[in-house]
Image 1 (tube, rainbow, N blue to C red):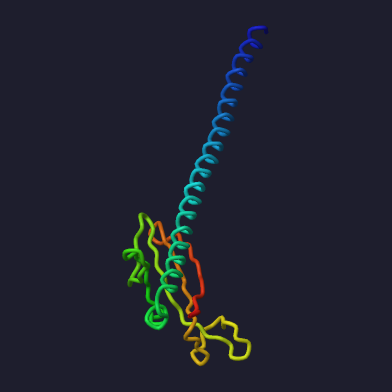
Image 2 (tube, rainbow, N blue to C red):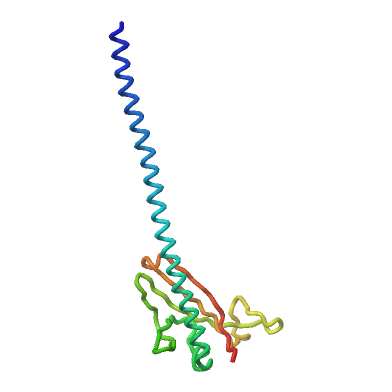
Length: 162
């Protein structure tokens, strides 16, 4: 009888070791999955911050351009709905047609016409040609990456303040 109990203990010990190894494997797998997800999220956050910086840079360049030019020959004359981007020319910014590629990112500025409510003077949510405001333009800066599947977008209004 002693041999049977002793044999069962050996078999039970082997079962305990196998169950313990399985539990450790499951826990380690979960920790590895969490670490992988954390790294992926960190990379996405880094790309999002870079994209937001590129979008903000475009808005600031656009402000500098607007401040250094005449409205009717610059922002007031640009076609609504067409993509543009900012380029440095010497010490000044200029607007160029089309999108721009910066590293893994593509950025563009699209201008929209603006209309104002004739009674309150507030900008209307939906453009109404009857209430067109020729001295205000809406600029939408978009930055894309990962083949356009990721996107950051900033919107600002520019006025003919001179």
